[in-house]
Length: 305
Image (tube, rainbow, N blue to C red; front, side, top):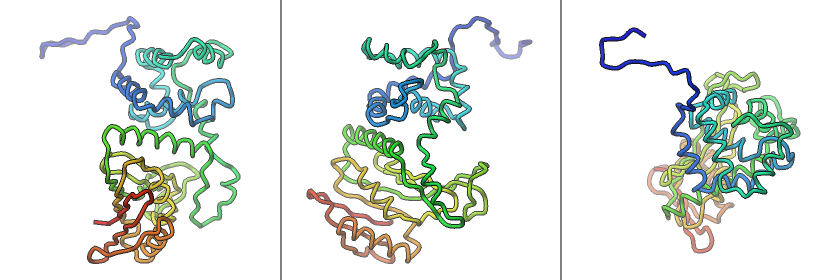
């Protein structure tokens, strides 16, 4: 390459030296080990464990986590991770670290032929994700109505993995107050089976509960685009409260899902009364405040600023 203006030069190296542009990802592998993420996946997820062949639950889930951290847009972007020779070599070494000889041999026996890849192929991941889908639930859909399929056992296992991550953070930086924000997000998509949202385009609309003090997602429910944000908020809030770790004494809720719709607000209030035996009090204007006994002497308060 012809140069000469600035004092540097480009050189082309034809040797396979194992360099990678993903050098930052191994730090997250370190964090996953310290936080107990890989162990939690092995304990709770049994999708691949039942087959006794091919990729393990830990390998598939961690590959998808790393793909998101690297900025991947779709499952097919796993080919980019596989193409990074240096990163692939690191990943192979890490997955064997700390394992006993018996465990290493068990991993080797999962493959009939010599394993060549460091991360699963897109087709293998699609087959794995299919285990989280329940055709019987999908058959209950009614055209034109909001519908949320009941979570499968595999999906519930992922919830438990997330709870262990939250507990890890709480153990190292305890917080007595949990300020949670519950809101839905429109994600435009071009998938053929996607439904239209209230903005008039095909989308998905997951409802997510975010814990401000720890900057983590406590709970998230994937939804079709036609499911409104105010659909079944009490159930989602209840599941979120159950996911909070020990040490939380007060919960503050911020949500525009119910706060600006009096009908939904009434449903939310009645639901919380049934849920925890809370009493309702106002804190000025139309902003709701909810407080009561959570049990075991813990205090729960919810308010919308």
